[in-house]
Length: 107
Image (cartoon, rainbow, N blue to C red; front, side, top):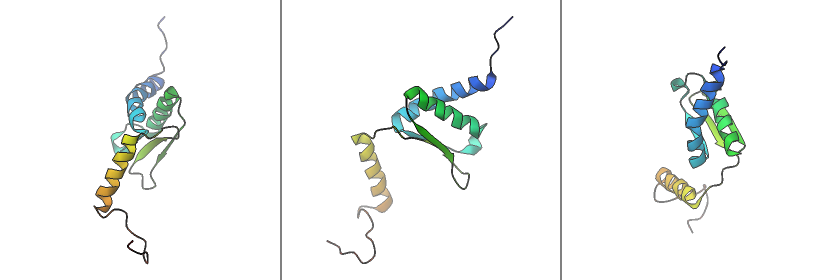
């Protein structure tokens, strides 16, 4: 008699294999739920990938349902991560930097 294989477990494991390198590199991953076969499976796979890394993770779905996400509570940002974040903020706010609160001085 052949070995019994839980197909759902295999699907979660395969998806975790895909998510693991992204989590390791970025500390988080976001997906469009309309491109996923099963959002709950994706979230289980993200949690499995994090366990394989020995990380704590949170998963969720945006309020409007347009994104599903997983973010590590254990990921430590590198200098390169901080630089990329700064570049994104500069692109968002322009070369003037952070917007000043109303009534603040320009010094």
